[in-house]
Length: 137
Image (cartoon, rainbow, N blue to C red; front, side):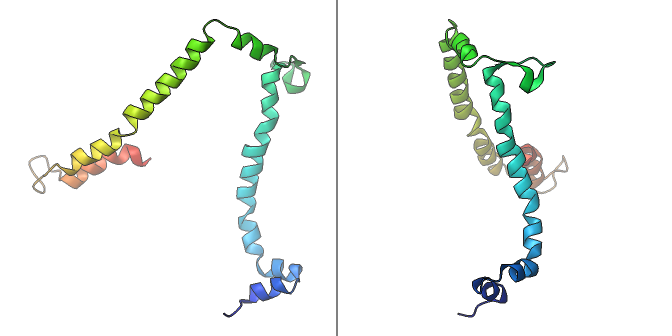
């Protein structure tokens, strides 16, 4: 099996030459790496707001640290169990009813037979495209 120039340069250990030859790949990786740093790791600093008595005027660092006091208050509420149940119940209903609907609609539209450009000037392909365009976005 023949080795490429880049693999020969890399296997020889001359990393500067490898970087010089393949610098475009590193430039292409800048934007995805920035995305990961900002939206994956940068969000961790905002998690401390759950443990503070956050005041907008004081900001993150000026707000008082309260620890688990807020969580204790939420978990001790009488309606907490009902709120968790309602959340899970509505999410399960959403999965049951909304997940198969595009599939069912597609099967129904697949059974429609239009004879080309009819009285409405629309054939079955245009009808399917117009109806299913919401799911493509």
